[in-house]
Length: 430
Ligand code: NAD
Image (tube, helix red, strand yellow):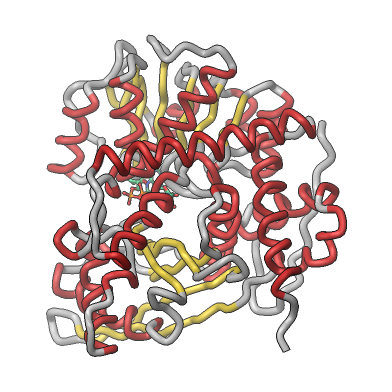
C-alpha cells in the first residue's frame, strides 16, 4: 500500500465530511509537495481559495411565489491569469464542492499551459424542476450577483453539469446589459451566433478521446474491440462514447442518473443519444438490457470512463474493476484511497486535469476569437486542440516516467510548479 496522505482542512468556513471533494483535492496537493523544491514555500497558496463569493438568488416562480437559491463563485487562484471554470446547476452543490472544482481548474489550466487561473461556480438547484422562464430568471439573477467579480479580464464562466449554450447566452446578455455594451468574452460555451466557437460542444469528450487513445497506445491496448463502460451520458460521456465507438471500440455499458444499460456486442451510440434527448436519460433504451445501477461497476471492460460526478470510484470499485485504463471525463471521480488501489493494480488512470481539459482549451480558443472578432474553422480548432492536448499529455507522461509517479501526481507537479513560479515572480501585494 502506498503511504496515504491525511489532509487537514484548516479553513473555518467549511466543515468537509470524509470523501469530500475538497479533502480529495488537499490530499492530491500533499502528494506533490516533495517535488516542489524551493517553491514549496508558497504551497499554502494551493490550500486556500483566493476568493469565495456566496450569493442569495431569489426568483419569482411562475405561480407568483418567491424562492431563494444558494449561489457560489469561487476564484481559487489568479496568479497565471483571469479565473476560468464552469458553472454547475445541481441540488448537491455546496461551497466546498465549488472550492474543489475551482482548485482543479487552477491545476488543469496550468497543466495544459493555458493563461488562466482557476475558478468555478454553482447554484444549489434541481433545474429539471424549473420552467424555461424560471431557469432564465435564475441564471440572470445569479449572473448579476456574481457580476462584481466576473468579466472578460477577471473571471470567465463556462458550462458544466446541467448548464449549456442557452444558459451561457443569458449570462452574456445579463452581464452585457449591466455594463452597457456587448461583452461576448465574459463567458465561453456560447451559441455560435453570439461569439461561440465551433467545436466547443464536443471539445471535452474529444479531449477524453485524444488523451485516452494516446494512453491506450502507450500501454499497448488496442482500441479495436476494446470494451468501454461509461458513467454519465451528458455532454462529456456521450461524446467520448461516440468517438471511441467510431474508432472501433465497443461501448458495452452506460450508467446515468436514470439507470444503467448493458449490451455486450456494443451499444448503438447514436441511437442511445437520440433516446436520451427524447427521454432525459438512458433508462428504457430498447437496444439494451437494463441492469441495476450498482452492477455497472462489475461489467467487464478494458476502458472505464467516469463522466458524471465526483467520488464515484471508491476503494471497493477500484478493487474489482477489470479496466486497464480509467479516463476521468468527470472532475474528481476517483477517491484518494481508490487511486492508490488502481495504481497498485497497474491500472493506468488518465487524471481529470488533463483528460477533460479539451473543454477549457476550446473555451480559451473561443475567448481569443471573441477578442479579435475573427473566427476559425472547426478543422483549425480541432487541429489546435489535438496539438495542445497531445503535447501537454506527453510532457506529463515524461514527468511521470522520470519521477516514477502516477500521471495524476505528475500533472500536479507540472501544474503546481507553474502556478507557484508565477506566485513567486509576482510577489506578495502590498
Ligand atoms: P451533463 O449535465 O451534460 O451530464 C451529466 C451526466 O451525469 C448526465 O448523463 C447525468 O445523467 C449523469 N449523472 C448525474 N448524476 C448522476 C449520478 N448520481 N449517477 C450517475 N450519473 C449521473 O454534464 P457534463 O458537462 O457532461 O459534465 C460531466 C462531468 O464532466 C462533470 O464532472 C463535469 O465537471 C465534467 N466536465 C465537464 C466539462 C464540459 O465542458 N461540459 C469540462 C470538463 C469537465
